[in-house]
Length: 207
Image (cartoon, helix red, strand yellow):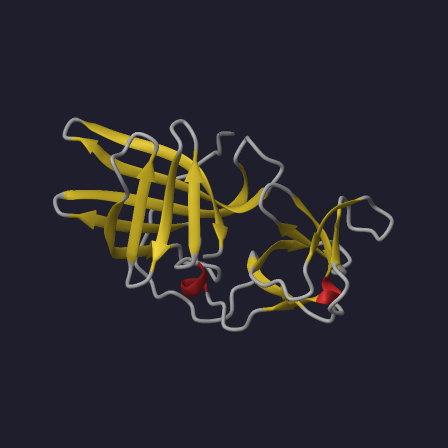
């Protein structure tokens, strides 16, 4: 896991803004005929090598950012990232800040661990040494007083155990694949009565 630099600020509880979130966001392929594919290229140009492709009915594609000319979208796939034409991508409606942060999957290494944001304000944590996943209930959100409401601190609890999840909108790499991530995560938990565990990871949008 490549380390990310964390700048800790004072967080205050403020309303989460309801306007549509910008990027990263989820898109669907549109306008591609049934017997064709949407090419994903190494660079934002039609002459760049093809690194992957998207099906004509493919959905839930995470777009990280757009090229300078706004004609190409940086898309994150399973193990790689590449560029696809914006002309054949349609943004899914209704993606507010609150919705996208409740539709994330975060993971990291050293050790391998993961977080999944589930319905009803449930966050599920698992790691390579645990007996099984642990479900925690979200009890509070503290957001930065900015239009995009990041960094975001989420407090979760399971019985007498508590943890904090800090989400930051920034470039992140898992150090193992060629995939880019648009969010970084810091997971701080009560590992034992005498120790605080701090884990770093990256987050993606999706189910």
